[in-house]
Image 1: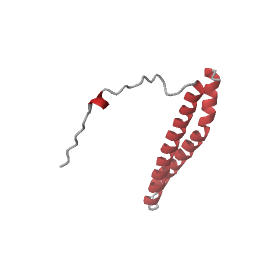
Image 2 (image 1 turned 120 degrees about the horizontal axis):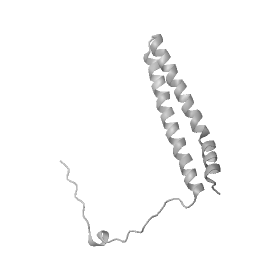
Image 3 (image 1 turned 30 degrees about the horizontal axis):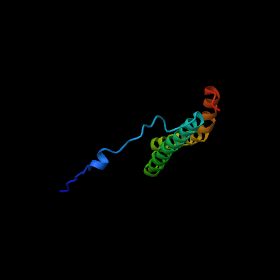
Image 4 (image 1 turned 60 degrees about the vertical axis):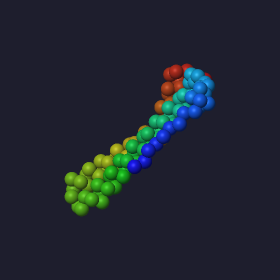
Length: 101
């Protein structure tokens, strides 16, 4: 059985923590971060659907219903990858709406 002990010395207990108002300094930086997150999340979900489709196709054993489900998962993965590729366009539209410099 492991026991974790956290020691708080007076130097670390009284450490001066600076106030962070925002991590991003400009609207463009915020929109760029949004683009990166959108692309990452959509690509990750698309990879999951691609994996599910591949596994379903391998496990189908010729069952037409399962093959159709696998094809649907492949189609969803393709749509996800397409949306991930369009994420920069969405951010450009948001930049135009917000009026970022």
